[in-house]
Image 1 (cartoon, helix red, strand yellow):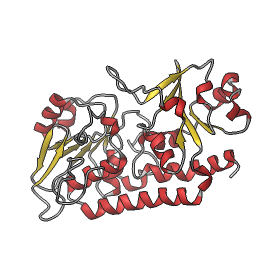
Image 2 (cartoon, rainbow, N blue to C red; image 1 turned 90 degrees about the vertical axis):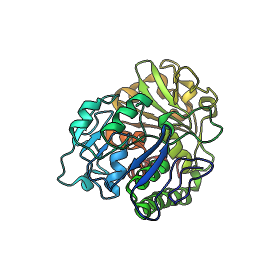
Image 3 (cartoon, helix red, strand yellow; image 1 turned 180 degrees about the vertical axis):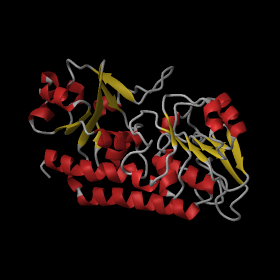
Image 4 (cartoon, helix red, strand yellow; image 1 turned 180 degrees about the horizontal axis):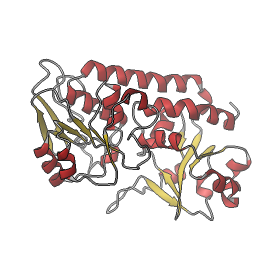
Length: 322
């Protein structure tokens, strides 16, 4: 169970306090303890993957955006660009955070709900610059959660609670969940079909397990992740991953009722090994080289999900003969 937007803390996933009643001061519980937000923030640095999407959907334009992949010049994809309007936030790239650079933007709130970083020491330094809200605390009984484990639902709840935008956050959740439910209802042929989802890489293919946002989304509309990939259990210590590496010369593990591969289209469509898969020979291989569509899947926010589904679903229906 995820975090709540009510005034009580969810006993199964104790990540949020506050949201109802007087909006500020507001206390947000998270993996490193809690953060107190004294007054309504006006200058927000959105450092978490997709945090800017949520802020913009709630009507807040951040002063700085961390686009870890450097995919978009304005820091957000086309699903959020209209909400950005004529605002020109600073766009930060790269894997980590330079506290001095963040401080230069004079934020009064820093969100970082889905990141590889920071560790607790970096969070503490950022929290001295401005109230800083990292990812939620792991649910009770988990050995540990990886920051990218944070679901799009919990991301909305964390940010909406930090802003005391409870009702706006609930509406955003409900709208995205309704979109997903409609796709699932209107496409019963997806139910129970196996899917493999991979990205072409230098060492072969990175095939994702169900803790990855891409697979989570496809499972939410009825698909089931390939058991062969799921059973590899790649997210073990000491390295935490969401994928297993599949050979580029013998990619048979990618075969499924629907095989989805993100990467350079011309190269993948000419790759003999990939196109020898039974799914490829049957027309059930989807090669996705649209950078925005790939980005929408990878970011996996409440705002990018409808964008991704609107473009992906017709492709999947055609491939499956639905």
